[in-house]
Image (cartoon, rainbow, N blue to C red; front, side, top):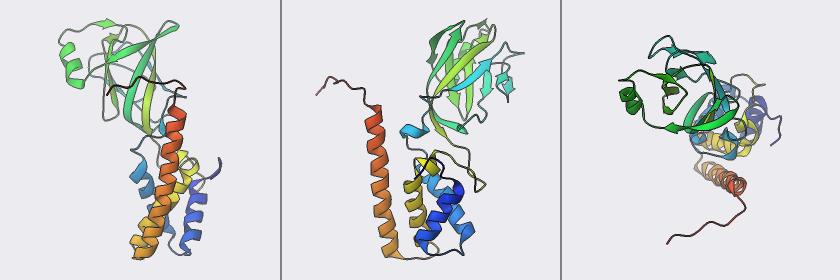
Length: 226
């Protein structure tokens, strides 16, 4: 895999492994399905920790207004595609800025915030909840606030041969072998090749999991509670 690997180069590699060049649409579909097979698992490369998603929230025109841009109104914010982030699978933390200091906004659930809005108020962000790519903040912001959002995300889908994302670079071999497993299952129906691809994919997945674990280590021992 290389930093400049693309949707096109990934499809070409699968076609070369598959020894067939006449199944272009099937190969493209298998690659996209292979990404769907794995993108709900968290690796070091589908995490916003190094580069948080940023959002600016402003005083709202009224409770429940949904925005579609980077600066939106009300207390519900649609998290639109930004950089590598198509949508969030899980949000770990939301941080807000006042005016230069960053602090952590407390997490709760959607219904709790709905109940909090039984008493309308304005102020700095105190609570957040997340559901179906919508972020809800309480109270309604009294001024513009910058937010940083940290969590696991799903990438925008690959469309053109020149498109690339973390799955065509860091996850290249995992997607390669998972796509091959799918193709050898259908339309080819070759059980031996399915097994070969599955074993190669398992090795690629194990490598990514070990690398993710290595990168997440803090360099210090933790207490053991038996």
